[in-house]
Figure 1 (cartoon, rainbow, N blue to C red):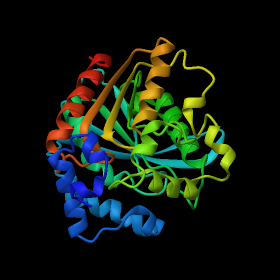
Figure 2: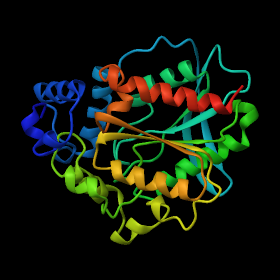
Figure 3: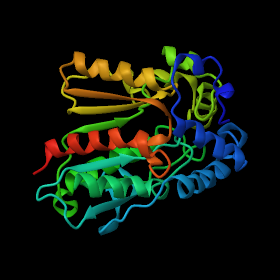
Figure 4: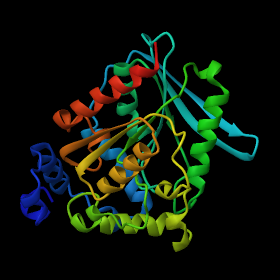
Length: 297
């Protein structure tokens, strides 16, 4: 999994960063399996273990407070954790973070290092959201939870502190038709590939018609006008890469201020494992800090 041969023709088209090769070599040595070779429960345990091994440690001086977001239109109470450093900005931005994991695995806990690192470096508030996972709760459950959490934060800014006025998308999955060219490039490469994405989709979709539903595939939303300023961060060695580029282009065409950063030689998953991907994480974390600081004082 960690050798150039495993990347096939991709290795001749791209320069694969040494941190990427080392990461997959270590996973192979530890006996970890592909996502589609595991049950959802096994995959969630793997996600936590991976974060323990590769997430690293951050000296975070601040508070971690759990709340339960609720909505007048739903009985669901969504757990969220607010991270606030002791030297937070006077009027901080709020970064509401929805963790990855294909809507099947991962959790706030698996992303704790990322939350603390962003809260510390950007001096903003970071809110980690624990949305429901598939296959126990298929879409749109996760999206309803994320909306509920966001609306609760907007309605409780005095309680949480700060203000959310922008958007950061880290390798966003925006078009479930899988029609972008990068899906043909990364069919069976190490880590997240097109075959793995199809397995995730089987876990979280109720039916095939949902692939063009804007709630699930935001690329198909009828209008992009009026969306908040955005920063889109993409991994070069990622089947989802071209989704993010197309989504960013849609926002730019609608007049939405949109910055794009493609991290060369990086695989999907690198961002929340800064303990291992030290070099590859440096620029995107710096970019987020600079972006967030535009919206706080």
